[in-house]
Length: 119
Image (cartoon, rainbow, N blue to C red):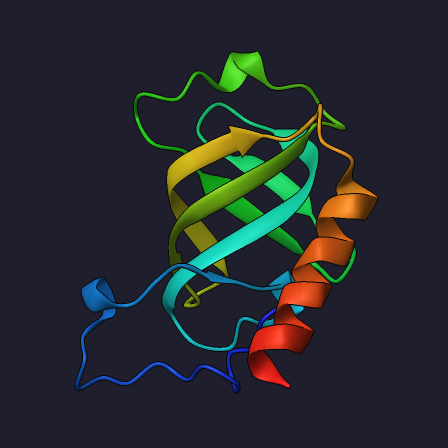
């Protein structure tokens, strides 16, 4: 995945001009725009808990998203704004259900992209 240290957020640019940076949950150290992919481990009335193998995070879905459409164990990709205080929470703008995607292949492609663009 792309590390925040490889693509640091610059406050002079402003958070709305930057892309959603795809990272592992444990790589998120500052608030900003991120994409995370993980397995649904908990579903509440107004939030979704995911685990990507490096950590867990709560996702606040957009008001138009039907939480009941998800089941624990589903693979999802979430794009949104992460607040890290008091805890890491991603306020999602988009949630994709990746349950029909080969996640191992998806992760290998992401690592290949990282090696091409950042190394």
